[in-house]
Length: 386
Image 1 (cartoon, rainbow, N blue to C red):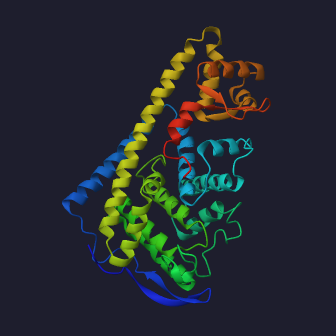
Image 2: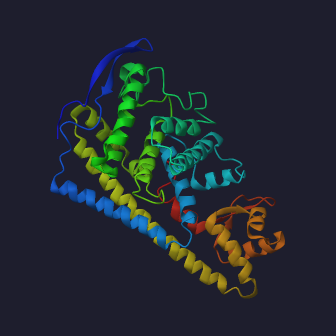
Image 3: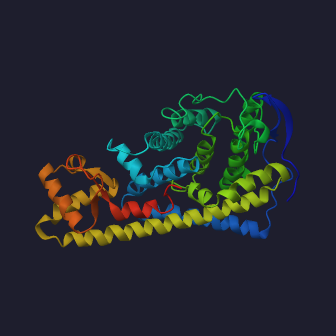
């Protein structure tokens, strides 16, 4: 539907140039979203896909095992959209403080994303409301170290920003002037709480566009905007475990993603954006279920192979269980986590390496780290750096 522009322009001066900054109208859209039978069916299919994803967590013997690495894949992909070049292996090594040679600033950004997501989820579980204060706190964690630490972490911007282009005059998009940021975010917070008639998926779709349009921070807006989707769906109990992340879908369809954001602003075509978003939810949730099944089968098959080792099978299985929960580990860490001696852990890892299940990834003689290769490979699909 073409509603015309979903906001108004205000001429402002930034970096010595006069530009037209866009100030979005408050949500919800007017007129209301047109829920045709086809769109309603797509919405139901997306919800069903989320339901299947929620159900698969009940089948996983230890859901936190899958969650640990899946959250980290999301952090890698979401940060890649902003230009980082870290891989999932880089992040897992960094968390072991065993990351020589990886791009430090990039991997710190990814690690911050994990911390920000986990912080936001923990606050929600403690009963803290999904609010502007929580959004600012999450942003503060996201930019707590590394690049962006000097970009007012946890504070709404007090200066003009622009998106795309080399200067304000040739920018692709200019968000609201700074004095409009707080009122716009108050309106968004109000919609998050009062727009429940739309349902969680539609509310997340609308809120994401609105947040990206307001661009309330000096840096980190894209990542916080994607985090907002996950936090809202978890807050509304769409998923008991936070396993639905759209960053990979947005990464794979970057040009269409940005085009539709612009189309909402210029033409008011919320429906085209909503269709894109719901298709992404359906595709992403279905893919996550398939990934979980693949990993369950991988664990089962590899455990069966390990049982064939004979006398060393018991300790090898204990070490294997440690790799299932953290697919990159050093020998010292494996010994500590399994409660077996370092020499016993070393022999177990050598047995797993002999089966082709794990692989040494540092190339060093001391402080070696090993990866559960196939597990990392499955989770890394689509998460390779650009």
